[in-house]
Length: 174
Image (cartoon, rainbow, N blue to C red):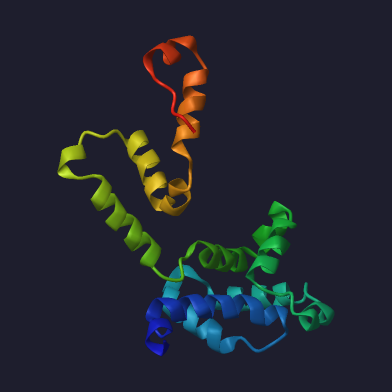
């Protein structure tokens, strides 16, 4: 288990999360700031980010900290309540939040998607259009849900929408 979560990508993700939550809890965040700034290099201005994190942390009261409702989603909701001008004042912190929200904790999901794509789009199906491929991939990815669908009911409903269809297709007995 330790090997699974002691990977570079996960450590970066964890440092981003810690760097966002510690100022809200009025805790020391210098180690996380150093780790994030050293990983991202020139993407963040260390002094500006530190100042914005200190300012950002003052918006959360000790009462909120004690209730324990300060997490990434609470911070996201806080940013959603700000005006564009207020977000611009916390631009470095907003960028941190964006990184946390869009960065996958692992890449297993994307790897599974590409494996599924390789199974779906074979040499026999190379002429499949993008729209159809998207639909087939959605059905494949949500296979557990699509397997539970009663296709006979859908077939009968499709036939019942027009007399022309009823003349071509035979309804299923349920």
